[in-house]
Length: 289
Length: 278
Image (cartoon, rainbow over all chains, first blue to last red; front, side):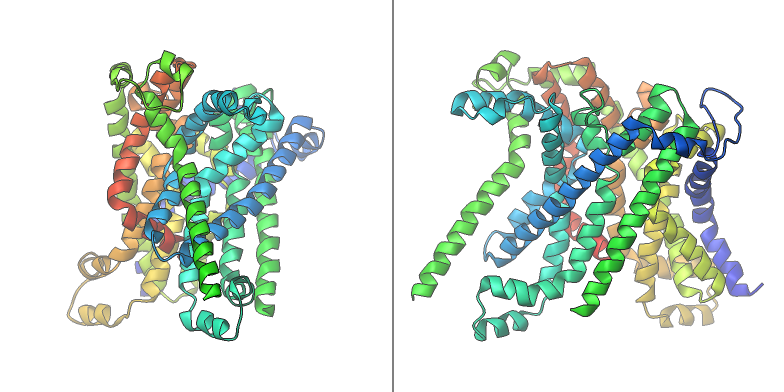
């Protein structure tokens, strides 16, 4: 073996060892468990082929959680990016207070969504009803946690509150990297603000938009903390997202590790496919522009 | 002139809009802080006003009935241990992977990077089993080792990218002077990696400090609870006794708020750098 490879192995060994034990092995194990009837309570289990996957097709609770998650992801991808980009553009166009605003909008990103969720639960269950009474706003008097129709939006508000700042930072960095002369040139040519944004800024930050959408997609599919703290998946299982469904299946209901693993594989493949398609499509668009 | 007036109007409008948006962003925290100083009775009568009497009773109760200092210490210990591990193993691997131009190097790098696509929920079940079998479950040091395993790919990726942009000459000169690989790395290379190390420390500290699910799966002993685990426990216990719950939540947030106030410049920069590079 070449000497350089020996040194390389030596330098990579500690990281690779821990990575193999705590990521690679459990990940590959997950594929194998998904083909077994392993129940966490029993020491032995059998290979059952694809029967877990077949069972999933009829699992209404799982399919509902998948659709609920998909709806959440759709809202998040659009709203997160639109709000973050809007904030970034406005902040960059102001002459004063840029740093203060940036600091404030990023602040919720520092907070765990468990604590953030509990704080918002206070807002939804205690502050909203009093506001409704004081100002006569009926919609604030709805059951924002207990009624699944509204609790979807509570989860959405909490998630946006806690995550928009991160994307805003990405977009601000992208906007700052645009050479000032280009904006000046557009101004001289008589373009107004909106025209400048659409024709000059947009093509230059499309790369960051690809990143922004990728980040939204991959994080919102995995949403857990927000739902766990705010509704716990309830009422019933009405707001149960996929990650929580997997967690419950494995560690709360009947410890069906094999079946839960099959669900986890479906989640993995879904994220992989959707982000893969997104990157492929958007990269091609970038080239065209 | 007319155009200028309309643009001043436009800027004023935007500024007002941004102030409202900023207030909206901060309002949940401000309301929580305000009400944490009130009695339950006062919360129910007027939630929006400042407390008539600022009372620390809720904080005293929260402090007495919780293991606040213990959980805080546990969390700080867990985060420090994990960061220490992540920085050491990833800087070594990331640097060497970038400097070695062999097929093997490419394969190892590829294996590390591919895992960044796997969602945590897909390794969760296997992870619980392997941690149980290796007896790392139930210990804070065990949890830290797991964080090093999960966190290293991203850190290696960042170290790899950073190393590629450092000129090799210094290292070559040191090797000619008879420096061995180990001292070369600790004395010369690692100090040069400082900027990216700072980014990695910030990103991983944020992640591990706020991570909930992994400690939930690994830690059962109350004395080893992280801040989030004990907060969650107490939230259940003080069912709808909001004045006390709010004090507990604010206590849980306090370290984050303090760190953010003093380090926000570095944190925002670190997050920004990290996001762009990955």
